[in-house]
Length: 267
Image (cartoon, rainbow, N blue to C red; front, side, top):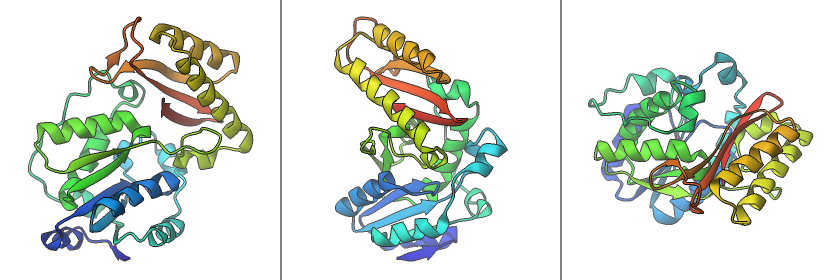
């Protein structure tokens, strides 16, 4: 594995590569990231991973400071999974990269936008730079960040960017909790609490309740268990709007807090 820190150096590699996959990360890698790497290794000759903790997508400096970074362990994970190139740039390397002016999609009906104003703008700003610095054939994104995945897909579409988005399933722990870097900030008690919540959500969905019933039952569970939350939404993925009351075709989105750690998930 080769570690590269310069944007021009990593960009120049794509002139000679026919089949390449790219996994953008903020570090603190886990088995969910390893799954994305595995998928890329299966479908491409060369796999690129980037580790860049993007300050522009954090609403509060405290959240950025508390992000559980461990670059030494991240490098070990990438080596173990036989990543070909690991890109670890500085802020200046990424944001001084000149790109052609592109359009940003309107962020409509995106739940995170309401509670994290400016977050998705930061996501699009960094994806604009990284997708230009590392113009791979395919980019691998997890469904756990489904809202982020949608806006990146919209961004690629309106700008006719030819990088193919490979949507990958959410990898979960044995207890049902989606793997996330932020899970490292939770103690055992809160991890158990979170896993019980996710399993309850699956239970009410599997009973084929309507969207309105699912929302009501989950909110009741959250209040009974004294779990603070920002939203519980049942979203029709075709329109990305609230699902109709009589519809069973929807995905449940939730943002909640445990020990002041904010977690998002979708089922």
